[in-house]
Length: 109
View 1 (tube, rainbow, N blue to C red):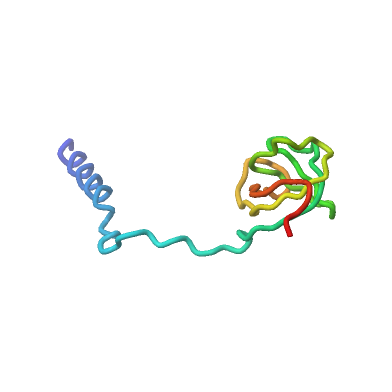
View 2: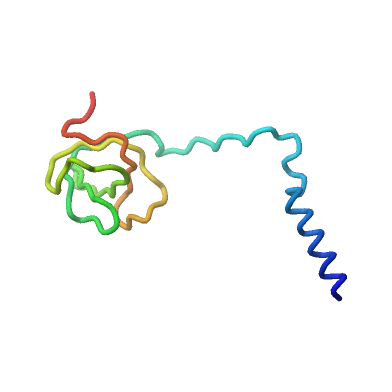
């Protein structure tokens, strides 16, 4: 019985280390396909105190966004413009999450 278990373990280890031969002839992993929603957007609105896990931002249209990134220099109630990409998965728990690339009083032209 010990021989069977040991043999099975050796085969499994060999398959894992060899990656089942699936990477033969591949020099580099292909880049992930482009996904919709990854383009940068700019939204005007106000920093709010609605955030549970992340700072929150309410757009001028009333939409709620959670913000990922540095918000240093702005306070709750400040009118700001936030530019960034929408994030698919987040721990922010509220609204859509926006990864900040730009945050200032006015939107870039």
